Amino acid sequence: MTTMNTPTTTDTLSSYNPSTGELVGTVPVTPVSEIDGMIAKAHQAQIAWAALSAQERAEMLKPAGEKLLERADELGRILSLEQGKPLAEGIGEVKGCGNRMNDEVDEVVKAMIPDVLTDEAVESTLYYDPFGVCATITPWNFPALMPHWTIVPALVAGNTVILKPSEQTPLIADAYVKILNEFLPEGVLQIIHGEDDQGKALVAGDVNMIAFTGSKTAGQHIMAAAAPGLKRLILELGSKDPCVVLEGADLDKAAAFCANNSMRNCGQVCVSTERIYVQDTIKDEFMSKLVDLVKDYKVGDCLEEGVTIGPMVMREQKAHVLAQIEDAKAKGAKVVLGDTPMDGNFVEPTILDNLNHTMDIMTIETFGPVACIQTVKDAEEAIELANDTEYGLGAVFFGEEQLVRTLARRSTAGMVGVNKSLGGASGTPWVGARKSGIGYHSGPLGHRQFCQLRVVSTNR
Ligand code: NAD
Image (cartoon, rainbow, N blue to C red; front, side, top):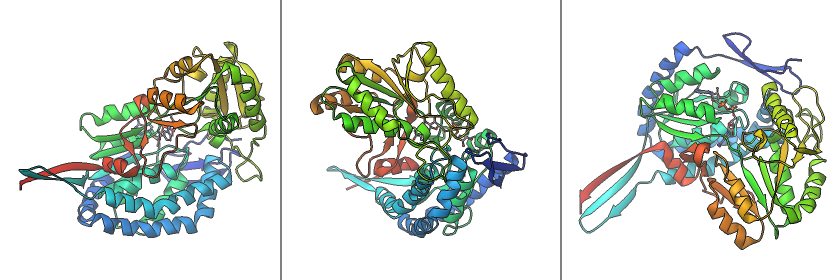
């Protein structure tokens, strides 16, 4: 069985089903030699695009949202077939993009309204202008949502966009771009297919801004490559999110959160719960609830009835997860559930106990279906361990409300949940702290990251 997605030729990028190894489809690879020409075309198109009002640009995108909804079943199937997540989740991801389109573009329009500041002598107007051409480079784990999150605000802000999606999931990205292009002028949104070389050529080209979502390593390369041109950057990178469970927590809620957030999308989520710190006094009760939930997950092909976890996206990813589990076991970890070998790209949902920070699985991003438990004696030890990471995307704390609110403010993560997931209120930006990112997107504050702020001051 073929289980690795690699281009079959230099001209064609083939997308394979990670459950079966079957070919799902192909797209033409964009020759690196054509990328500068595409960027020039994007600059040309940007002149007329930026001359429209934000409202006019927003109105053009609204029918694309409806189209995404109309075709959600078909597109969700493509997404699931090439990425592996259960069909309902694939369809749900496409629907999520379509459903939010109207509100999102309206939110960007509002964020573009200039601010006016005055004192006795001076009136200053703060304008939110487009940068020009925005390159957006995206990963495979949410292959419709990740492009959508950056393309929509970049476009409504008046930038033109070139998307370089992951080589693992080119088909859904291609379908998404085609739908938007039914409603956009020529050259406003383009797509480049290929591997790292295409991404590198795009970053090196004459683009004004790069919105990158992906691994820390690629983010570091992109930041270095962007430095000579001082190109504007948003980097949304990896993480090693902790969840702390202390006395006073609603253990049903905490266990449900940890099970779902360690296992969903086969653990391949940037804000997956990758480390769980549980107070010793409640550990047994928490563990038994967690085991009860995780044992019911059903692993299998995305189209199979009742499947809740698909395969890992590629065999390298599976090998990485299994190597971390083996490293942990060799250093004293106890397997509480799972860890039975599975065929192909599948990994059994696994719970490990007795973990500590000498193990790779507690320090290096895993991106797999593993719940990792370390016992702590108190809140102080928990917050120290939770912050003992170079990353800082999300963190979640369960326990007595006042105590965990205090701990939340000591967390070094960008987004923190207190007795709930880290999901924020409507309009909240998506923020990675430390080595999980630079800048942020989404919500009015995030939309303005796609703009050059310009200040014009006059006498009053
Ligand atoms: P990746 O970094 O390997 O690849 C992401 C994209 O970057 C791909 O399109 C790839 O072709 C391209 N690329 C790789 N190296 C490049 C370079 N030097 N220059 C230009 N482009 C380059 O990441 P992945 O394996 O696709 O995705 C998984 C990672 O993404 C995980 O670390 C995950 O945590 C992270 N992620 C973060 C967020 C977030 O919001 N912070 C969201 C989703 C995923």
